Image (cartoon, rainbow, N blue to C red; front, side, top):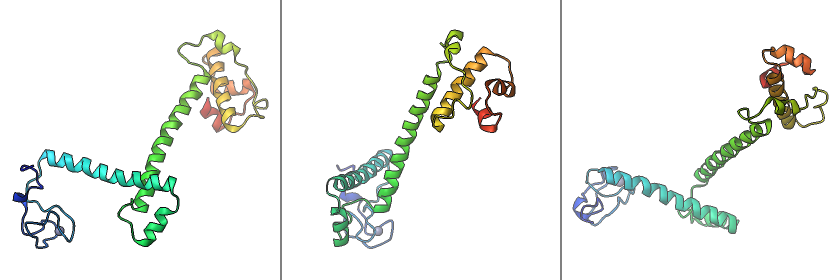
Length: 189
Ligand SMILES: [Zn+2]
């Protein structure tokens, strides 16, 4: 521990951050909370600081989340009473949870997108016979489907039509399929 920047021999008489006078006994500055240490930061210190801050922050998030789920209302009551340092700052907590949510949401969205393309058929292994099995429904016949399903079906139809009629332009293909030659269909094609 003698080498640690917490060691007594590195303590000074003034906070390096806010210049508040300090005693040798003060481990931290009483005004700003910075560690009372004159030791130059080594890579090891930096590394420890980095993980320390992540985990101390994490434990607050974890505690907040835990209490929020199992004892709803407790945090609000304690907050009003003044017990606040125990829990994550509400705004920071909201931000962290949002970031985690959108990260997970983004990942799950990617998975769904893969599913769509598996449904359409793996282009590498599908044969002409596979494409012939796909019913080339007209736009009117697709009308009963919801937007997402209809779009997926269209991709499947356009892919099959293109494989069976190589070289045909998008406009010609849409006309032959009895699909509208609009921006969305062209984009899907
Ligand atoms: Zn200070």
